[in-house]
Length: 283
Ligand code: C5P
Image (cartoon, rainbow, N blue to C red; front, side, top):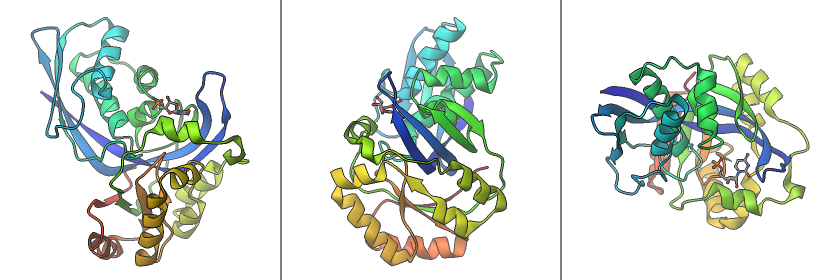
C-alpha cells in the first residue's frame, strides 16, 4: 500500500489568448498548489481490475473518474496490466475550479511510477497526464508553474513565498467546458499577466501579488451564475480585501498575509457561508 498526497491548485493568473484549431483555448496561466489536499492510497491487486473506493459517494468509480482514467492511461503507456485498488480520501471540493479530479489523476500517475518501479521522469508522467485533462500536467509537477498551450506546457516557477489563502466555495457546480463555450473572443486577454505575477512571487511582494491576480473566465462565470458574483462582493466587504475566482470557478479566493488574519477572516465568513477553507501555498 502506497500513499500520495494530491494538492489542490488555484490560478493566480488565467489569460485566454485565443481559440485553437483543436477546439481548446490557448492559455497562459500561473498555477499554484495549496495545502488543501486529498489522500490517494494505491494497492496492487492480484486480478487485472482497476477498482476505486472513496470516503464520499458522489464521485464516479469508473473511468469517468480521472483517477481511474489515469491508471488506464498509465497501463497503456507502460504495457503493465496489473490490477489496482485506488482509495481516495476526498477533502477537495469537486467541480470547483480547484483541479480536484486532475490532482487525483496526477497522484495516481506519480504513485504508479513508484508502485510499478517504472522510473519515468516528471515530464513523461505529465505527457501521460495531458491525455487525461489539461490541468493534469501541472498537478504532476505541483508547486508553482506557468502553464501554456492548452495547459500542458509547463514551466516551473521557483519561489519560496507562502501567503495564506481563504477559499469560499459557492454551493453550485460549474462545468469548465460550459464556461469555455460561453467565452466570447472580445473577452480574450490582450496581454499575458504571468510575467508580472512571477516577479511579485519571487520578490515576495504581497501587495503586488494581490493586485496582479487576474482571470479571463471570471466575467463568463459571473455572467452565467450571478450568485457567484454576489457572493464575491459580500466576501470582499467582510474581509476588506479583493476577491478572485480560481479556474472556471465557482470557488472564490482571497490572499491573506498571515495565519492570524486568516483565522479571523475564516471565522467571519463561517458566519454566513458553509464551505470555507483556510490554507497556504505549497512550494
Ligand atoms: O482538458 P479538460 O478535459 O480538463 O477540459 C475540459 C473542457 O474545457 C474541454 O473539453 C474544453 O471544452 C475546455 N477547455 C478549453 N481550453 C483549455 C482547457 C479546457 O477550451 N485550454
